[in-house]
Length: 163
Ligand code: ZN
Image (cartoon, helix red, strand yellow):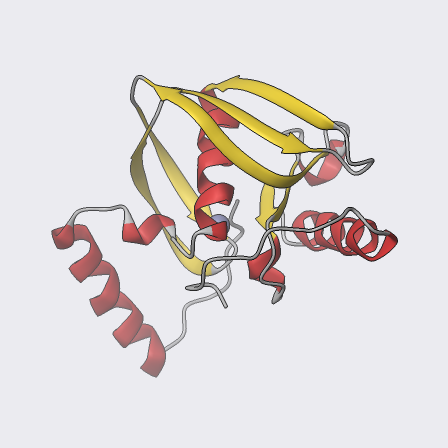
């Protein structure tokens, strides 16, 4: 499911709201700041983000059918992912993005983002396209990652927190 392109949400139903609430709980429980529905096994275009983190939980954003309508500039930040355990690396992203989506009441909203929010939106929306951050790194870095995973398969590393 993680490698698949997710389906558009046809309508914001109570089931979608329930799934979104469950995703927020999963995100917080795993010390994450963002989560996309395919990460919990639902191949639909739904993401949750809360940059305030699992302790504060005061900036929860739920986006249905998010689309990046504009992107500019460049920034590089270290990223991790709840679906890619024990690996963080620097990824090149757009510095500014405009995202259009629906909220949980089905109302359209427009978000202008930069810095960490821009990174997080791009990371989560990538999940809806079946793209992971490790698909966006250099071939050399990816080869090193794949080698590490192979080693982990024989001796698993201790669990770490990821965003
Ligand atoms: Zn991720």
